[in-house]
Length: 131
Image (tube, rainbow, N blue to C red; front, side, top):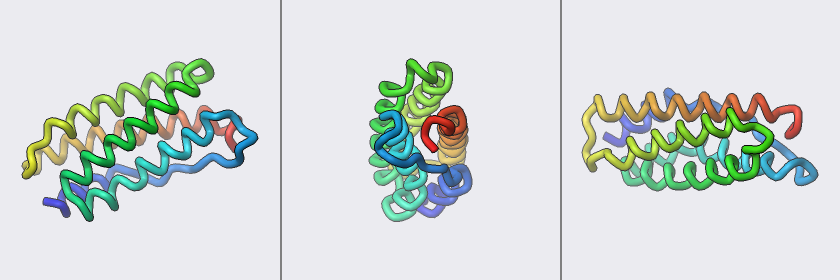
């Protein structure tokens, strides 16, 4: 089952570009942390299965909350989309049994894809401030 979870996570999560120096707005480092936690999802999941997935989702939620808090006034629609997609993924992952079915894993993959899309949208919108 770990392989199935890892395959879905790896297939839906793409590489995200990072920010940079500390002279940039606070949300740039928050954005980098979120991007990294999303990028780490496949490796954590492949090594730790469902428990690793659940743990990494908690990290993603924390990082997403930091992004929303620091950037919502500058990027309200993008941070709202990040919050909504991460909340949906968290809800789906919390509902997973210890030995999920293929269809349950597939649903998580779709939610993960939505997280990647919303994080990419925020990254694109904040690129001029963070690069």
